[in-house]
Length: 401
Length: 70
Image (cartoon, rainbow over all chains, first blue to last red; front, top):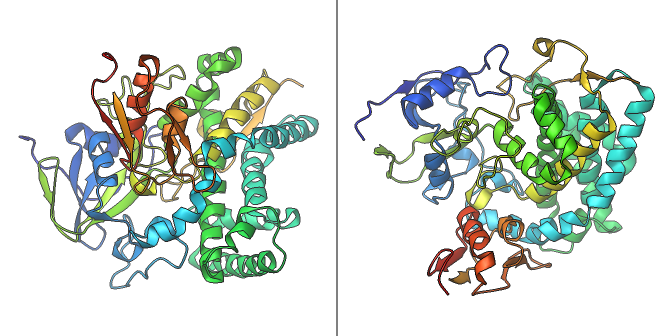
């Protein structure tokens, strides 16, 4: 390969001032040097950081790299000798085959392209209801609480069968897991409350099945604990990712007015716009894998047992793969961004996320032709990089009433 | 162009049905890939090729010329 080996000793945790949509500058610098770097985990364990598109994709498709939770190290925190427990039943994102398939298979038919598109009308209705309420109450508004959170929350709760009156508290609990700022003590409290709630919910579905995914699953050979695990994974994944895409995506559109105008003027642009926002923002920024054996990769040997950090946000900005990668171009014609991952763990709910964004972005920008930030862009409160999913904490917007 | 699919490898992401709806669908019950046209006409070949490229589990195999030929 000829390139010298670059070492990154601290995972960059801050985006550059004024560039909230770009990956941390140190990560882009590392990638400029090489698509793979040595990485020293906190506590000194050696590993690897992969920033390039081709290599990230190759690792994701390679079963010699494990997703098992107990093999992972935290990229930024030294837990010392603490042994990470295996993923609880149902949390199939952090399992390898055959356990992964045991949980994914019963769900696959529930998230097909066709089935998700049938939800379009319902998503349009939920979207319109929230835009009505926002219009009535404002201006101004916090787009996160008025729109970006509740829309996907209602959709995933309806799909899974979470009763209407429970949605608010559930949404808060999920937010406390994901925002990257909750204290350990509060995390444990929220986790316990959620587990209690899901246990009751699963019992209720077993006793009185209704027309939803969780009720359907009570017909399978999965036990209560497994159903709780699946429900938690689907609810958390379905809520937080899409909510942050909607809010951060709106922020990005407001900062790129000519792109926003194009989306408003050309309805046929919506599908491509969604893919481009997914690529450009890559809100699920990093994932981990552990090599189960020695693997040759990008001219290096990844030793058995070493942990690999996969940087989706730099992979989706890889100039080898995307022309002018740091430009948001809703007309960009490309397939194959890694925003939903790749390989056997590629996002199960991606077609749902597409339907939600496909409906929500055009509806929002068309309803409010004068939509703009209500504060200077620099004052928009961003989630820290330590959060699993990147986004904004709030997005104050206003418009001409 | 001749397409084969391996439903056992399929993880139901739906990228094939999204990318080349004339060539691929998903089983409504289990979400597995369904091959609608093993030998798609020229007009659908580029999309089929792209679908094979983005399939996350490598469940789609394409043999033969990419977008031209018979």
